[in-house]
Image (tube, rainbow, N blue to C red; front, side, top):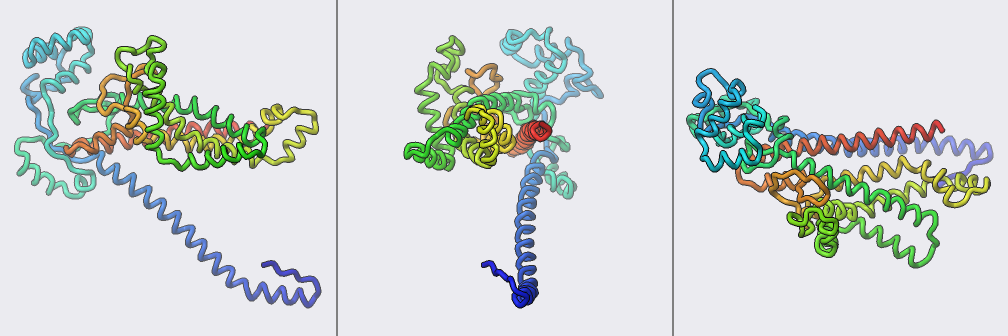
Length: 424
């Protein structure tokens, strides 16, 4: 409630009023400040706890036992890195069946493979390391003696080594049923392809719909109903969008999404469970959010800017294109970045659409079968072996880095656009 003072007497009363209420207002201000600090602190503590719990699982001691020790293959004091290509091929011929060697040679001639490829093959098929037990980072740092004692009792003969599950080999390798040899290259490529389709579909459609609703649509009952439904759709659970994607894109538009209509992948992906179906489903998921954010951004542009443009003889479209959009593009991009970040971490709709939980072939087109990083993490965390939880933690770290990289790139692009607009 505002109080108006005009006469000298009123001025004195104003002075008394302010003096009387100043401590109360300061006290209220301090209370709210403390509430804001507490909220910020809780958010930071939660985020730090989350990151530390993930890092805790991605590093630590492991008890490893090989089926055949490396020194038995190459001799004492040598490693597989020092073996020649002929020696590596001889190891394969000696310890594997002829049929299996012929299969590997048919996939890619052994003599034409690099030494690193042959070493990976020997490790996977001959040495066959098996993680018998694993420990997280915190006990590995502070309870090393207890871990060594426990490992000696439970896993006699196993090697105890400190392992980082997040390595370049882990990022560059394809999936495997053996956690020591599993990688996330296929999942990373699947995530990037799906998000690319999501952006290409959702961004132009979402911004276009927002421009129409804010600048061109009349205040009719139909448009109000559309507006209300857009708000409602933004709160629909993601699993519902997965069911919609399954019915429309996977089954209804199967000839299109499988690539059979264009002569692609008819023999492998004829069921429509492809990268394209997943990208379109996620585009539907984030579309209402992009529309709402873009509408808010366009609505924040001062009306005086539009009136000035009309006063100079510009048409409505020229006003929107040359003035309204440049003035709101940074806020539109901010909303889009948040929406795409949500899509990158989604799991439920992707599972319903048909992402593969185990696939070792990289997607090479939008009509390929696929998996994504969240699906991969979900599948590994469901395994009973402890080593799979370790590589799941490493995959989460990669997902976070990928998410932060994409967001940082989008924010840098947004800031450059805003800077150019201010300088124009």
